[in-house]
Length: 386
Image 1 (tube, rainbow, N blue to C red):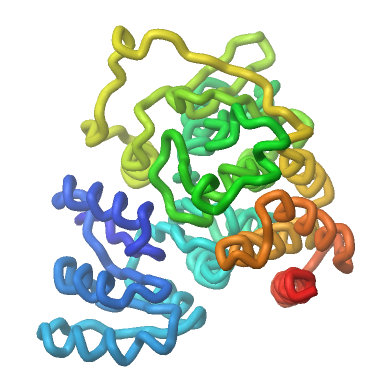
Image 2: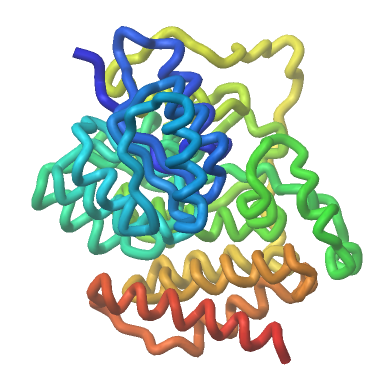
């Protein structure tokens, strides 16, 4: 029987890459559910192609258009709406594997639903573990759910960790491209525009993730995520800049051996590994040509130009509601930057201010995490209005 896959965020770049992997292995994989935030036209086209049992669209205003398009095309498919609709999609469809690729915290209830069902969950977006890592990891231990990293860095760590036992891990190195501002001075970065921030040198990603790469907030979030995925002390997680993006991350073991995972910068590779684990299927991405590649470079990130990294380590140490505050404040600040309500140089300082003003709780419930999330977004909005 093929593995049944529900893709949360199927119209985004990760979701589309996942569907291309599914297309390549029709005997091993099939689609059971799809979802989008508001791209109902693309979701309708995907539903017509893959014929899932159900789809979900978060933007409730798009639901009517989606239903009409599916009806006109003769596609028999249930439509769920809103954030609750994502959760329904997970609880009601017969998936074996749920790929969480919804940008932001909107997909959190659906991820928790998948964990509660004891499913295998591919974590492609950082927010579930950043916001609710303690809840998700503890619940997975109770239900037998399997959490598999899908983003390239954590997939690389996961693959490298197969070379030894968890208690033999000395250090984790998360590699970073350095984003568009790796070689910019502080003065240049202070005047950076939205257009500048969206010019990623290596990866083709959505605008939010691309801006996070520019501030290196993406690495801050990855530090927090790695803390929960691999149960590693945050002080043993380091970020190293590697502009070629060939080494996706590394693990150092206590005997001094360092195991690295290398590959061309193509998200299909980590997606495919999560879907095929513990097996490896034939490659869909291009292979590395070491003769053409030549040299690879590594350097330490500048903490003065990229202060988000300090926040990531601090939040990983604190746990509790800190991740929810950091993530929500950053999402809101990035949205404000995209609306020209905030300058690039103001993003991280505003996030830091909101983070350290929130009402911290060390052992929060899901409702308390969501309340902090909502509060942080409001605070950023109010600050941008001043």
